[in-house]
Length: 178
Image (cartoon, rainbow, N blue to C red; front, side, top):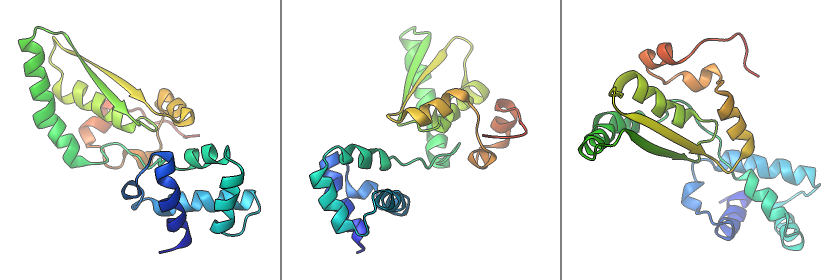
């Protein structure tokens, strides 16, 4: 096991995370930590651990570095198939039974908004009954990614797995992405 993994396994519980959630993205996280260590002129993980002990506010900086921003539209096809074929139909049935006109959905940890927008596209293009509205609240603890989500502008790479009908109906192509 490398030193970054050892550092993460030691620190993640203190920040309320579990190692299992970081196994697949450890390279991205370790790269961020390594860059931070360079900023602080710290050459090894043991010294960074000592730095964290002597400078408690650095834990907040580390916590922000642990944000995982890997996201794209329709990232997990199986989940969206389940939502389309099982979850939304059941919610619609229950809403109609209860004579409700609105459904509410919360996309927690929405990052740049791809998952929330995917739900909205799925609902409006393939599902939406005329008498039922879907309201989606999308939240994230990272204000920078939330601002990107509010803009509703995405790079082409984020759209590569989106089914063609949803891509065509939901997006206008612009010349550039900043």
